[in-house]
Length: 274
Image 1 (cartoon, one colour):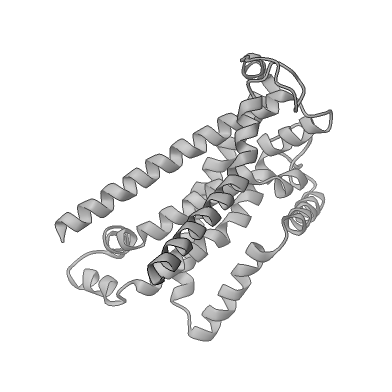
Image 2 (image 1 turned 60 degrees about the vertical axis):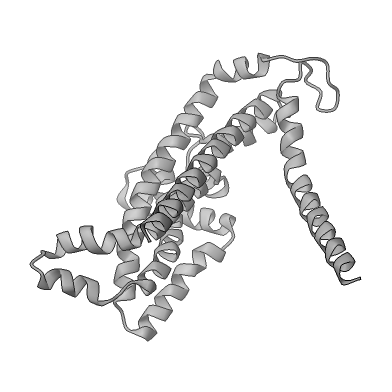
C-alpha cells in the first residue's frame, strides 16, 4: 500500500509539472506555429509561408528598433554591472546600520511598478533639460534610464557573493606585495565573478524586456523592440509580430542552452579537480 501511494504521488507530481509546463509554453507554441501561417487570421491555418519573416527583414523601422534594443541592452549592462559591483563592494564596507538602510533603499526600485519609475525618470529628465536649457528625450535618456533601473539588480546579485567572501583575502594579497588594483582584479573579482555574471545577465534581460520605462524616457523617433511591437499592435496585430517574437524566443533559448552547457562543464571540471 505504501509503495502504491508513493507511485501515485510520483504520477501526480509529474502530471502537475506537465500541466504547468503546458500552460507556460502552449501560447508560445501557438505563436511560433502561426508565424508560418499564410493567412493573417489568428485562428485559421491556410498553409505554410515565410512571407512574414521576409516582410520583417525588409521592415526598416523594425531593424532600427532592434539595433536600438541591442545597443541599449549592451551598454546599459556594461555600465550597470560596473556601477553595481563597485556599489555593492562599497555598501559591504559600511557599518551594519548604514548597510541595512542602503540595501533597503536599493530594493525599492526592484519592487516599484515600472510605470512609476518611468514617469519619475521622465519628469527628472525634463526638469534637468528645462533647467539647463539643452537636451531632449531620446536614445541617451533611454540608455541612462536602463542603467539606473538595472543597477539595483546587479547590487542584489553581487551582495551574496560578498558575504561569502573571506574578508582576509584582500589584506593577504596586499601583504604579499600586490597593489590595491591588482589585488581587486586578481583576487576579489574572481570570487565575485558568478554574482557579477548573474547581475549582468539579469540586467541585459531586463533591458531587452523593458517597455514602460523606455516608453516614458524616449522620443517618438527612437524606439526599441517593445515600443515597436506596441506601436504595431495599435494598428491591429500583424503576423510579422509573431515572426519577430519567434526569432527572439529562439535566440533566448539558444543562449540559455549554451549557458547551461557551460555551467555543466564547469561543475564537471570542478568535480574532477576535487
